[in-house]
Image (cartoon, rainbow, N blue to C red; front, side, top):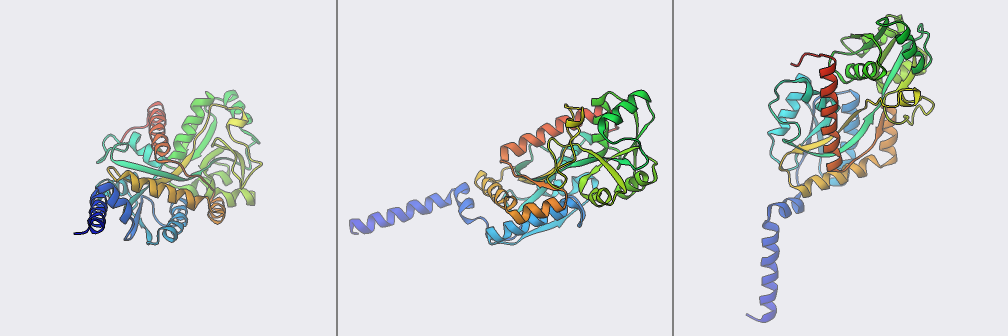
Length: 326
């Protein structure tokens, strides 16, 4: 064998050995089939619609279909358990959210460990919550709400959806932070909160901004403030609660993607970059704003830190509110 042929064969063998390594092989071959995103909510909601917008862009970039598999039920546990037990190959992902963190604090026992059994990839966007008031209520800002509650302890009626939901916990956090006494009334769903607000059965309500945009713009309810750390681009004149006299208050809803634990880092990093590229596109940003979502990606480490901090935050609120664990 000539020296040239020997060197060529050695190089080929070296490359073959390199690609035989699990991490390198997985990164080079990925993706070569359909990627599935398991969503713990039914179709048609804001979380579902927002992830579909991003999934479409990812499919175009990855040259493989990225499909959404809706698996609602049990506070997101059904979907999360499915992904926790899936092969860690980057083809089965989970839509995670602040609801994932809430479930970690709300349930006594889960069939998975929220922090250890998933590899967070990136956030997709943040959902502002809005504090609304009945048209009949005398409030025009959060300062007036707090003053009324302090002047009339236990008289302020606050509407949210079900006890233990993000909206409900945001209301609990508000009363704790403001140091006020109020009656927090949990309703079955958003339509019931809207009905209660328009009828004047509640003084204020906490709800995800997206479903409330039409109600606010039509004048059916008054928007007092957002619970997030910054203003929403679609409503630039609406202040945050923190800007309105309660600087230590913040409650944000968000969603993102995670893979099963032990998914190769190369694949997690690749997916994180794909999400970042997708949410940075102007048409995606615009579509998410229309849904009441502020597009925002994050690194895998930052996403994991967000999940961990939200678990600690909402677990404390659940404990302070004396919400019975399930």
